[in-house]
Length: 387
Image (tube, rainbow, N blue to C red; front, top):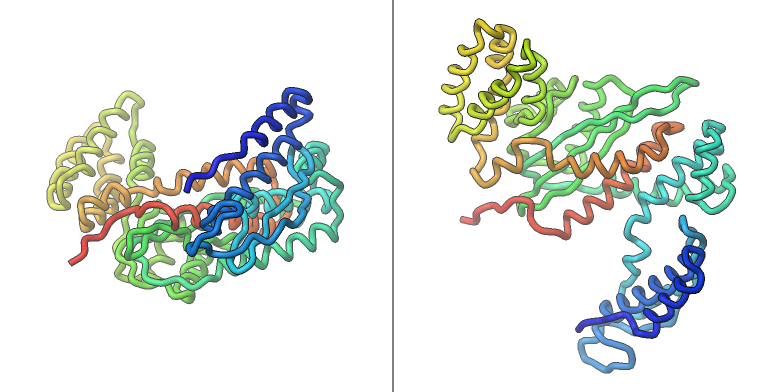
């Protein structure tokens, strides 16, 4: 069954924008969102208005008013209600957690006196009103409950584990310090990926990674066949302690970048990159080892530090050869986290400085939760052969 916006709604939106221009954006958005929610309810029920069908999944039950504050002004919405079935419009769900978390991060800065005139202005634009400490407390309690449930949800069998760390600035005892954000992505036995967990802490790198890994295991994580990550400080020891015997794949992208730091002359870099690719693109681990020996010997005289570094580090990217060929390109780097990092950066650069660890964790969790839910309902990331 195909649903389209009613022609009268389209005409009304056009008329509002034509008469009021940008000043009419809020009213136009009200009309569009209300119409989209009605269409979505029809899809959820499996029938159109006033239609009778045995396939009906519930009954329309009127509308509930809701005032939604947005960047273009307050919207007066009529949220469709359903009896006998579970329904809530996606238009009100998508992006809601991360938007709330971003607002709260800025609001906390405003309330705690961390903000500048710029932060005050942004806060008022995002929230649409003045923010009090009690407003922040009530809102954070509701959002944190939802996010905490997701962060502590049970896990299960996970074939591949991809790890990454990033840093954001927070205020600590009057100083501005870097706070680490650890992220774990998993690919399950069905080939679907999801965000398994996130942790924010100022603690020492190894301690933070070890506590993070233990929390994943306590939630039921098992069955890991490969871990992919960069050579983050502290990660190696924590990984060996918590996941002994699990093969580790050093991210090839970061390996290449690390190698260039040992190249003595700028004009040599392109040649070094090509030689490293000839090693990493080998057909199997044995061929890669032989090619690595040839490449390392090539630079013994012209770049002895690079030659030694290659012998000591490049084999850390050979674990991928143990995977099925169809999986290697997906798991040889941490590139699957690129979109995550873009989304996080897009949100965190607005706040620039977080008032505390809890505020940072709230925003990062909200963004990751939405991305993970999108992945889980999408296509498989890899396909496992069935015997």
